[in-house]
Length: 132
Image 1 (cartoon, one colour):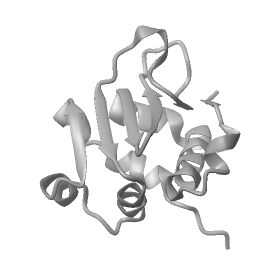
Image 2 (cartoon, one colour):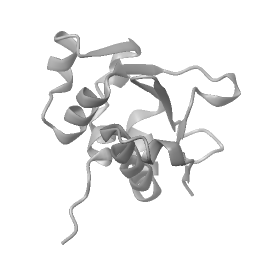
Image 3 (tube, rainbow, N blue to C red):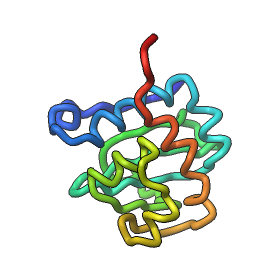
Image 4 (tube, rainbow, N blue to C red):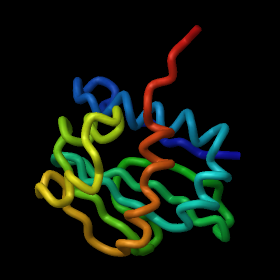
């Protein structure tokens, strides 16, 4: 079971990242265990003035989850990604390469660089799904 804590103010904020993070939460419901097995840690997204925590610890008693705010229970993030709303949307949509964005200082990474290299499954899960 995946727990997604949704904030009504996030969807109503008008930010592109809000809809993408909501999609990520929905994707965790079906793909959470497989994504957690690849990433194995806590990722914090600092998007403009908002913090979002993605808890993907496979050994945790809790299921993979996404929630607004810093990690709960005094846990420390394994990776913190600081980015503005526009660049986050471009990363998720595949219009901005994560490595190039890092080199161009459009994103800042703190923590495990090894985990940063495993961000692609998270970005893929946040992409909007087309309805056929």
